[in-house]
Image (cartoon, rainbow, N blue to C red; front, side, top):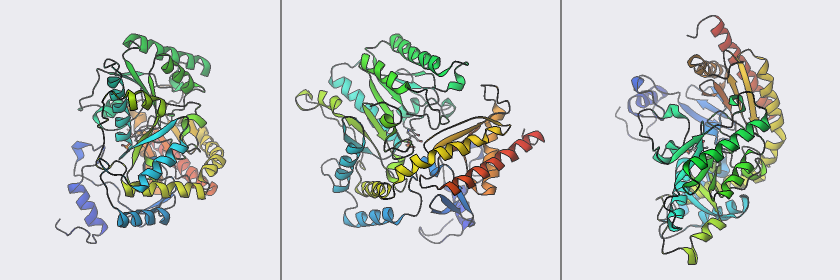
Length: 464
Ligand SMILES: Cc1ncc(COP(=O)(O)O)c(C=O)c1O
């Protein structure tokens, strides 16, 4: 293909270029170059419009990020204005107004004394930088042996070398070198895997397992507990009530930093700016964020950190240290201007209140799918939910066959006008936060038909 950048390619030419030149995330390498992913042309509210002009409900809101929906002029205008006013400044020796104002806004929205904000470019770098901060912190404090990170199976924290190693979705690991000497995994708080225990007994088991892992490694060596409030990519796993507060208490006993990874739950997904305290009852030491901070319009991530941690390694406690971690684009003025506009829209349109109002209906409609033969479990919190499909819903085991069901449901739903984000056997719904009741009805009606069609295929023996 030999066309000038910016020329108007038609959809066929565009797909041909994608097939030949793009290397995309999660690429099945045997099939590299054989086909291109569906080309999206535009977005509008909760919908995307594909290259053929078909309008589809964007079930996962991109990758759980387009909170206020597509095509909002407020954000586009803020991006254009800031790009013209000051497109870039080096955060290594200057600052800019949007990042300063955004840091202050986020400090006011986070719980406790999490009053200082470090900006990165996305969720992976947010978590990576937070982990590097704790590494720095313990070295400055003279505890270089305190480096171990405890995470959960089925958690997801990113794609840098360190955050990928902290991600317990082991299907992503093969053929990468995974740091393993200072990371350990404990159970996912998925009650379906709890061997029939009730919620209280399961919680007791999880807390005891955490304590045992700390004892095994040595409390003087464990630096961090890193956890999503709900395991998003792990299939919207909502922990037993009180889980996070109990884990935080154990962390406090052993001087372990508690990092809450709110890359998915932050900025309204669960009806609050941040879910840690208001939804899950915990004030962490560090909160990481990305995605919804700009509603996905431009990349931005970061972490908010508590003053009590910073006090121990700054000012007269700094011991000559320099926190020399950062990015060319830390606090990028255009991204931060987009985030400020995004926050303004969320406030002006009452989007958090809307999520709180409508989430019960969303959960009820999703739960209504439980009568379908393939549906083993349905769970939801705020505007994120998951329908887990198994050929044998009574079994806790997910077979290789089950893992192919999501893709079939997705294919049927795409024909009917809905993008599903299949995670193996799980259909995750996390639409734009502006979704209305009628649109929830449309989304769930299509999902029902998609599941019914996949079930019929299985019955006819067409899915092997
Ligand atoms: C909880 C969580 N943390 C971190 C990340 C990584 O974010 P990014 O893909 O923006 O690097 C993700 C991505 O889905 C996530 O779900």
